[in-house]
Length: 187
Image (tube, rainbow, N blue to C red; front, side, top):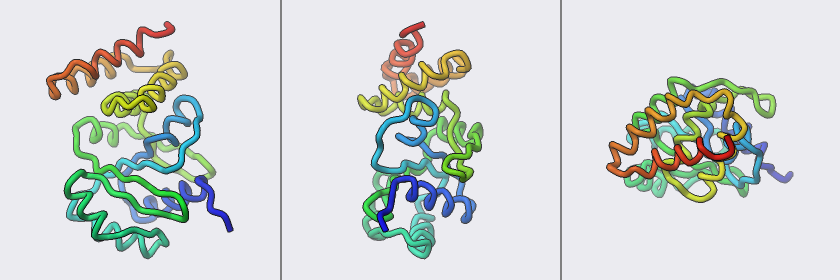
């Protein structure tokens, strides 16, 4: 039986819900839901998890049928705050929440039913900010599409306040500048 990305998404979300992990779906799945659908080859999850809890998480994931190299995951989680597990040919990328914006995104998360299963997603504003921070071309395109689709409903003051705070913290105006460019485009 061929495993589809939809199957990986449902298995991942079911596992996270069953184990009562606090998470938000980000990446291409969330960008497609809140912006414009696009192809993606993985599932990206932002998770509230302490780095020392990663080994227990991995044991639970293995029991649930996921595969991973536990030693590699522990090393990567410790060094970068990220790790990856697999299901079939697909991988699931986890980002351990570490910045104030992520914690705020968890507080504001919304439950959405996708593929007939409830999952937690960031608000459009939080996903826009999470996409602007790394600034990769695909992330910026996703943010642009979310702004275009959600423009009438966006809390612009929230976006501007966080973009300014993130830019101030990084001592780099690119985050606030990118947001201003997105908001000014195609008004």
